[in-house]
Length: 96
Image (cartoon, rainbow, N blue to C red):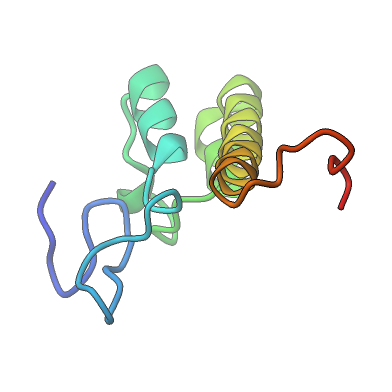
């Protein structure tokens, strides 16, 4: 994966503060899923935006549905990790 002009093949920019990508957000599951199932690179199609909408448009319903599920899993995983590392997983503290 080459980085050109601050962006890599998936259209993601490196963080200006550290020069690295964010820990969870940089994982381009949508791009990977679309490429694996269709052989198409979302960053090179249409607007070049790697998004759930682009996955539906260029990959079809199955690829778009998997893109939605992957984004949901990333969000839920990030919250679970934060709750674990910041001790929010104690009994009785589920909603707070």
